[in-house]
Image 1 (spheres, rainbow, N blue to C red):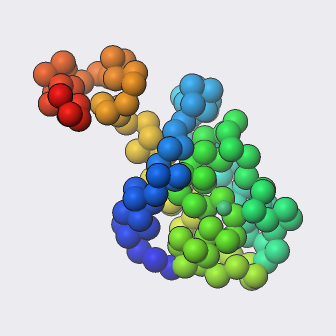
Image 2: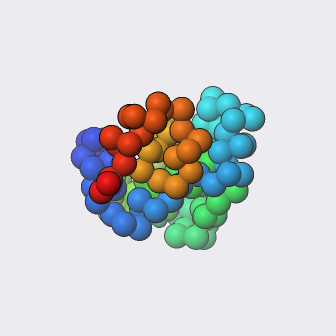
Image 3: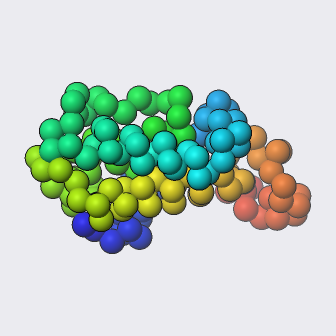
Length: 142
Ligand SMILES: [Zn+2]
């Protein structure tokens, strides 16, 4: 398995992975259920959709939206076994070990926790809690 920081660095360099964001619906769901519950669902998704040696429908088993974990999985390349192999160095064709399942969940958690933080560089920054002065300083190209 590749080191977590290295994986996140590479993900940040991918225009495709970077464009995934929690939508209003997923953010609301996360707020309502709380991180712990959402991650418990994540554990189930990993168990059922990723952990088997040959997951059913592999490559298409993760919806693009509807649950914060699904969005996080696409953003972090933990959506299917080929992405896990390519990005995380976890080989396909065999069941995931407990350590690997924990690792996938840790990746998802890190992304969701990050996604919850205010992002001054995107539209909707008005809703940010940052003071105006700091917002401006953080805005690109002004
Ligand atoms: Zn994938």
